[in-house]
Length: 283
Figure 1 (tube, rainbow, N blue to C red):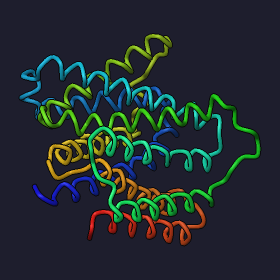
Figure 2 (cartoon, rainbow, N blue to C red; figure 1 turned 180 degrees about the vertical axis):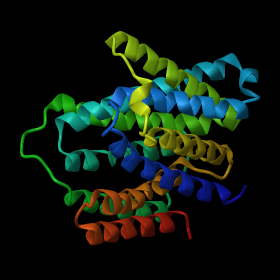
Figure 3 (cartoon, rainbow, N blue to C red; figure 1 turned 45 degrees about the vertical axis):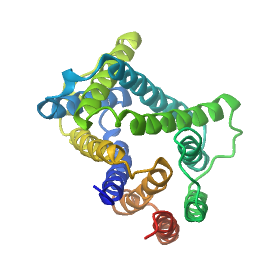
């Protein structure tokens, strides 16, 4: 498993980046609530055949997984609030704070070291991420403080979830964590729909093949990430940097499918990010 966890996190990052474009395409045919519900439902159904050990999980770890699902579910909802109230460019820059939070948790809570390679790598990654977001359209209106707090809270909760993965995988199997996590996400979104009294329609998914594709990408990517977290050699600080490689897929997807501009500049920024990642993992 030594070194293999780096490959697993890199594949997870590429799959995560691909879902950004899929979400944008899926929203053309279905509402966000429908997507989140069916996204979780299809994902949960996909993992059932591979979750033989799920019910042997100790109750305390099931509870911790519930807390993780609450953190992730809340972060996704806060992300929608932030995106509705601020420019995409500002959101992209603020989203970088999740990397800072994750690295801080890895160093302070998990006792990981901050080497010069990590510091140089993190500097290059942050520089690349900042530059790639400079070319996005930005609004001129002043962003409300509550919207800024929503964006920061989204990043913080995502970082908490990432740290919990590393801790939980010391005592759980990947199939156990994934089963309970997806089940709780499905329950959370079901309660949200009932609270909103919003009706969902299966017919809205007809022809919207992006939703099942996102579910497959999520399940496969998360399984690799959980396995990577189970490796004693893996570190939150390095995994956080590797995850930023998802921007490469996002840029290429925007160019090929959404005809976005400034692709050469964004690819240059992505190269800076990749160089930073390579330095951080001592490649």
